[in-house]
Length: 314
Image (cartoon, rainbow, N blue to C red):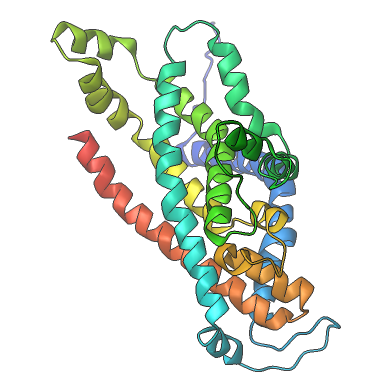
């Protein structure tokens, strides 16, 4: 008599339990991998942020003593003319540097994406400022625009023009800072756009060429719409970076210089208040206002991005 074999199939409940167990194990593995980053964000970002909010409501000084003053620091800010200059200069750098950086980066990336001779060398040259320390790059600019022996003044004198006081003239100092921001910020953006360009199928351009579309129409109707995610990321990243501009202003323009007020940014003002003057509570209030400005601008960008993406999809 042949033995009958019964294969008991697992019930739906057993399958559900097995699936939950598998998902739990996978989630725990993922959390273990990101735990070092989460701890770093908590210790070096979130906790300092909460402390800064608290200190902005106190008169914390250089020796650590403090008293709760409520909104006094914020009321003082809105009566501070130097604070308004710092805010104005910060917005000026954002408006003047971000659009040129994005436009120039897209154009250069588009050229580097073509079959040109030595494009690997060009990519390396453009990316060098990214891997170079900001302080080292700033020192190079400081030497180039030196009023006595800088290369720029030597060139101007060689063609019969008078050398300039680049770091003491308020308007010229702004020009040097703007040039540095644009130059140092191109490399990273070019690489991002280059990656986006290489992900666009070549068949789109071939079809457009067959239909008689010019290179300019291909660029505006294919390249730009398909680069929308990269452009959005670069714009947001550039805006946040420009609002946090500090190193180049700090190294090129000394406190007390005639160009100090015309170039001061919110981060530079925060540093001078907190670490030079020791007025840490007031400096914390400046940092809170800067955070609110960046958050507002970012939220506006996200709102506009939805319309932008919808328009580009059409």
